[in-house]
Image (cartoon, rainbow, N blue to C red):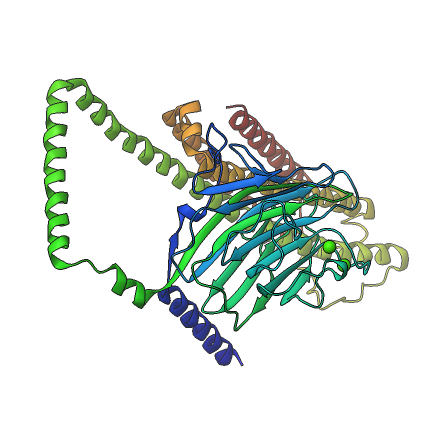
Length: 500
Ligand SMILES: [Ca+2]
Ligand SMILES: [Ca+2]
């Protein structure tokens, strides 16, 4: 099963690789618009024409505004010179109403459509493809907003009354109105397969696309025009388009053939490039002679690498510190484990002692605990003494747990600092000065090492006592005090670091 899965993954990767190798993509700026400077000062959009109620600004094209009975459209000036393409459109349909109208259309047609037509603001009886974002539920089947692809050969009229249900190629029910982020659609037409992906605008992540529809055997007219249109009715929405990005898709092998330059031209271009390089070198030399201070600035750049090295050292120190802390945490676990064993032994003995005092008979052995070496009984160890020992042990355990939690907290904070540094390394180094941070970290590491050694020593001290089954109360108290002092020290160090 596992081998089969691995094989499948390999195959998929191979297939993906093939696809990437075969398709050559080229951004087509003459069939695209995007902010900033979407529209020029005179309001025109380069390579595009718009009309009707459409208005273009530097940030977006408002294809139809939220007023009653508005229609508008924007069309490319020239027909495409490529067969296959992908269009990514970033848009927003928004209005105050719970229901909006009428919708937005993305077109690829043999001829440019109208600017005030009957189908979402553009021409009916189109020849080519229309992707409709239909906001209004004309047929009252509660299935709008709806996204659909409708093909037409120039003979059919769009069936508005039924929301085109009998004419659509494929579609999907998606709400695209009033989303926190602009909605997106990616329409791909490659080797007669049409795919529409939709991004519902609930996140700002560019990759959150979902499949809306896919249809094979789609034949579209060659050398068509792209367009976007929109319309409002009795109800109204703003229909804004921010990005219209067209990429042409080519079969890589064919593309290589068409892109080959004649040899003579290639040699000429190479020669031109070399001449240009030489000219640039000469100019650079002259500039250096005229501006000796520029040289100094270049030298200054080299000192940047020192800073970077320093930063890397800080990173290493931090990583080392994290390791030490992890080690410490593990040791703490060990200490707690040992203490719990000791506690178990002691409570067994406390029960035994109580029985001795009550009945005077020797205690039964419980859970295979070996009998202690030295004699004990009602005379040598009173019940209240044992209880004191147990309560001391409990206090000690609680303190150790607190310290453990504290160390974990410290570790989390260290990791946070590391992450912050990774995100904004230069800000840190400029803010505090690299050497100070470095020396402080070394100090902290030494301190932590001392703590670690102390705890190891404690662990060693405790284990023989656990084996012997005795724990003098004075020692336990001393240890508690030691650990509390350590905790205070650590918190002071941490506070100092945070303050810094
Ligand atoms: Ca409709
Ligand atoms: Ca409907």
